[in-house]
Length: 456
Image 1 (cartoon, rainbow, N blue to C red):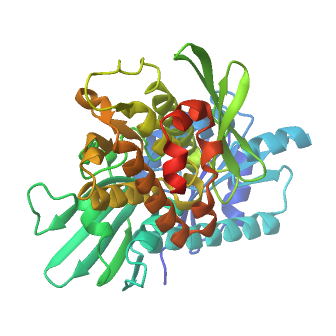
Image 2 (tube, rainbow, N blue to C red):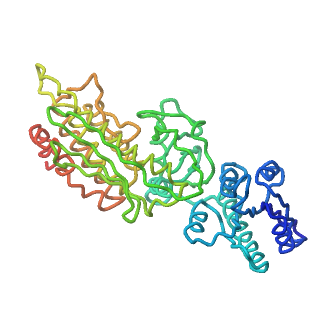
Image 3 (cartoon, helix red, strand yellow):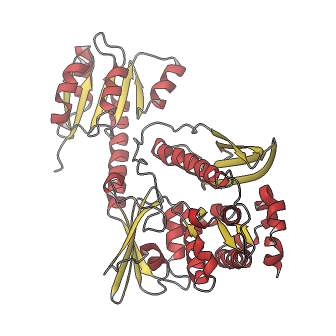
């Protein structure tokens, strides 16, 4: 016989407590009654109840306050909760349910109906707990397909995985840790000094994979920058309380002066109907760039709140940083061979890649930029003056702000190679309208022959 379900009952009326004790008989239930919420709170962690039933109107600590204290406890916040009250106003009933209660029973109540409600809620709680336990230990396994690891990385990002992707081939095992879909760290066994773990993972074309869902502590994971082994730069993305509805994050606004012209960058989030983050770049009051990223569902759950806020912040800061690279004056012409403004070329690649981000995901976009750069930098020395940093932006090394003339066709070839590989993964990603993406500095790019090099 299974152990009785422990029901904590809080009601200042002793007659109600006796009626409920009779309605929930042993051995199926063990009812522990309290006349005051404060007394119940002293015992809850010791009892570890399966369900709490509490009156709302009580003289010392009312039921709503008792409920709020219980839900603040890490150990008790998942315990099902039924409010019991003589309140019949529909707006107050709705308010208690929206606060996170599992059910509401009006006084006077039918003992048979109360018993049915308790059993139903306990069954649902049992199924939810079993599902959560299964998810904690759930693994997806298989073998790499023709496209290698890129689809797996995209999957981990799109489902906002918190866990690890591991790929094993003869003689090597490579892994990547994700938190809420953000790639935090990567590594390999055996490791090689100077090896780019992400590039190594993405270069694998054969082997078996395993995707594990598990709780990761972002504070315990290493932080990487630039060309290192991690992409996420914000370890503050936590695991929020799942109770209650989420609310849309607030917007962000930045103002810059870019080479004599005022530029504003504004980022807003909305459900339309899916969760969408939109960043507008305007120069002298005219919108010249629109960048969007979305989820395949609306923002509703409190558990997704931190991830949504982080997405708004990261997108805004990434675009602002990209535009900010142009805020400095271009290098003065030097003697000798003609030179090109490196920041201008880096900015162009960044905004072209930005157009593919919503289709491919941040991780895969950055990965493709790195992969194509690595391959072409062996052929074009001028590309070594540029680098792809953790958030997918392309920067120019400060000591090499003025690049030699051959950098223009080299960057054009890099863009073409990147879009070809992106298009192989998502057809629309390969059809980016380059002039529209680079409209902000179209005249300067035209002057240095960037568009002509793309069409060569």
